[in-house]
Length: 234
Ligand SMILES: Nc1nc2c(ncn2[C@@H]2O[C@H](COP(=O)(O)OP(=O)(O)OP(=O)(O)O)[C@@H](O)[C@H]2O)c(=O)[nH]1
Ligand SMILES: [Mg+2]
Image (cartoon, rainbow, N blue to C red; front, top):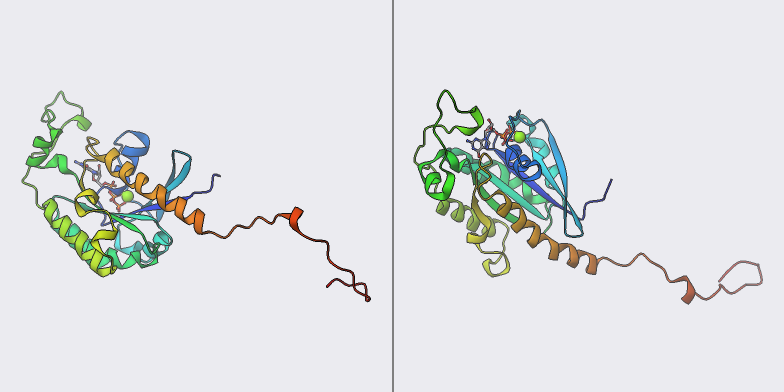
């Protein structure tokens, strides 16, 4: 198996659409999902780099595994459902602490998913035919509701995270670049989310490589060991 150069992890409450987002990006479809057990990952080749993207379980019973999946992560996607304010609250209360094991310069993206279900989704080009007896289930939309969580709430959380991590706003990407509203169902902003992160992670890979001590020994520059009287080497 190809060895990953970097790691991105999806975190968030159950049912917010983590698995659906990843499948939409990697497989270009929106299949039925079952609630994730433990975790699973995809390997994505981005330019000449291999990036592993980990999907985790949002269910409380798997909570203990979260920090293990985050270990060494270069970026974490904190996912909520724009129709469930509690799912944003949970990111701060339950999931942020799991990211302590991530890389010290870990990037954070905050993602409000299921925007297709909102009235605002229609303005963002999410309009689809309403369900009718002749419409395929995958092509129909539930009745639209006003969005329950605003993008500004996600931006506020992003700024809290910077404080929690003791990061300076000037040293990290701007909140507006790292807070997204998506729909795994229609694909809205899904490529933008993942590919923004890939582009930000690549310089981190290069920096790590530059800092890593070289394990290669140039044997041509090594002098043969001197013989001592006992026959051993000095
Ligand atoms: N309308 C709509 N439904 C979505 C969207 N994304 C996911 N869903 C639905 O929401 C439900 C949960 O999606 P999952 O992707 O399994 O959620 P999850 O976050 O992986 O959940 P856990 O694995 O339990 O943590 C499924 O019925 C999906 O079809 C979306 O963008 N729009
Ligand atoms: Mg899942």
